[in-house]
Image (cartoon, rainbow, N blue to C red; front, side, top):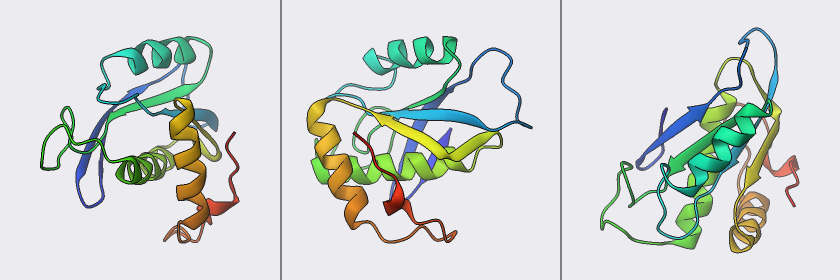
Amino acid sequence: MSSSGPFDLVGNLYLPDGFDRSQQHAAVVLSTPGSSVKEQIAANYASRLAARGLVALVFDPVHQGQSGGEPRDLEDPYRRGEDISYAIDALSAVPGIDADRIGVLGNLRRWGLRRTHRAHRPPHPSGRDGRRRQYG
């Protein structure tokens, strides 16, 4: 799965057994810790969540892994919040995903960034107001 904002994000989508695109499913975006990439700890959580019936998306943050962005290996907390928002937008466009039931899983520092970023984010171009969701 790939999402384009100012940079390309590359991610892996984990689907539960029996995923049916004609039904609406809950999903979660996993934010990797620090300089981790999608194949590391987040992949372990994503596969376990999918085994329990949730759709899970893990992605390489901008400047890391297979995602775009220079300089490489840059850890930018504000940018990470934007990456999560782009990942939510990409996930909400997948047939079978209920855009009103997308959550975010990350470490404690990321939760604070997530809430701050969503509170200040402008409405989604589709007319859906991303600020209405509450996480944590």
